Image 1 (cartoon, rainbow, N blue to C red):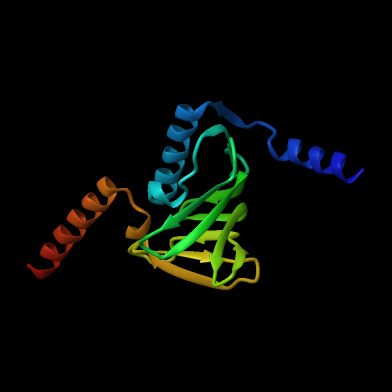
Image 2: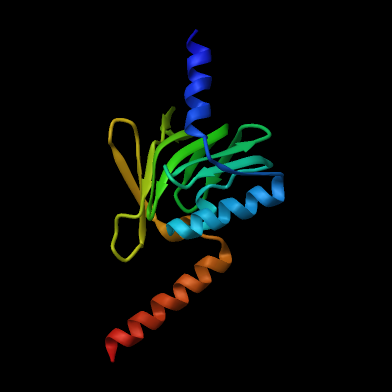
Length: 164
């Protein structure tokens, strides 16, 4: 009984969704979503995506991979595990009620349920656990090389403007 009610709530949650299939299309859609929200492309390094969906009215999104994936972020010295399906509710600068993402802290895998850009200048990303405990990292730790170069150029231009 529980599984049928779960699948019913999932189908309700995904009602009216825009869905794309295939690795290339999903990668493109996920990058566009991250950019629209203000996040760098590298913050969700999902592999072999097979399905991505978005319900614009509610902000619900999901991304399905062929298999679970672990990624090591060198810039934060953090290992992160991504389940076959990652879900979230999104709004500008925030992904909340996330599922399918865990970060290894010491010897424990801790669920990550929210990430947001709290800093008004957008220099840090805050990641939160279900208990509300958070940890911030520089946004540059999740940027592609191209994004980082562009970001650093803009920061330099801003500093020059302020010094004049």
